[in-house]
Length: 191
Ligand SMILES: [Zn+2]
Image (cartoon, rainbow, N blue to C red; front, side, top):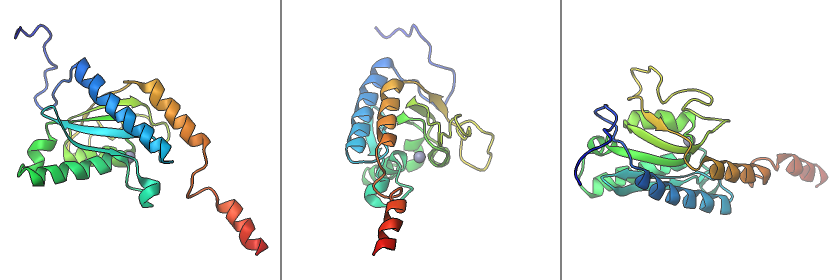
């Protein structure tokens, strides 16, 4: 059956995504977020899908790398650029047809990076109330920023409850890097 009963949204760039695709890719993104949580990282996982193929994926690795910019999306973007080099494809052409699936609303930094990469569509889980760049704190995704890439479309709310639960679990734990400073100061004073 080739007949198209439901027309895709009438936009030229962003592709529409089917429920099956969303379920399949978000399942993997959730699995990666769990892996982040198990490794005391902010539980965010994501996949970049181009032509039904995963061309990049990432989970937050800020603590592991001690680099505050290594959010899941930034890790995934680097992988997509590697994939393009390896396959002799133009990054521009690939990225403008790539869909990002991510468990949490991209933060302000990542939303700006996604604009600059001209990713057309982001499917995400829960909101990012602390740093969200797709509406929660700022709306970088659809803001009128003529010198910062292109706006992108968002499909929020997919498996949001699970994603929120993981974030809550994470923020209940201690951050292995930062918040021990008080304890450390005391220890220093003692010695
Ligand atoms: Zn981010």
